[in-house]
Amino acid sequence: MIIDDREPKPQREVILNLAKSSKVEAIVRRLKFGDFLLSPESGKNIVAIERKEVNDLLNSLSSGRLRRQLSGLKSDVNLDTIFLLVEGTLSHKIVDGTVWAATKNREQTGWRWLAVADFLASIQLPNNNGPEGDSDRTISLMWTLNFEQTAMWVIGFYKYLSNRS
Image (cartoon, rainbow, N blue to C red; front, side, top):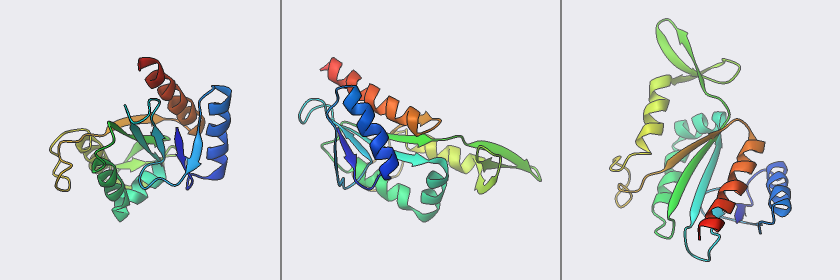
């Protein structure tokens, strides 16, 4: 398992410690795209995971960074599976008849709820009008409440892949 070196140090330490206690070999190095790369069999069943906290998800949607990151992952022919792992809670708030996306503490985000839902649905479907060459690749969506759940899911999924091979 490879952890991107740009992941915040506290999160890297949590997942490295959990990996060690679970007898999963994990290293930290720079990944071109994604935050975690899982490949229990050398070069087979390679899984990439892009992790986004809810606020970062919305900010990177606004800036276009998320589309670039996901397109980069989709263009990597070596990857078998791609996950967008969203961490946190995304709620909704109705203001003047408009349903807005809201964070856990119900703060309005400036995003219409349907715009966020449509984007998340679109990445999970083939032929989503993405950049040339990646339209048939889909991205699986996973939600966790916090980084501790994220770390447990990543390690657990790595072990699942290991047992499957």
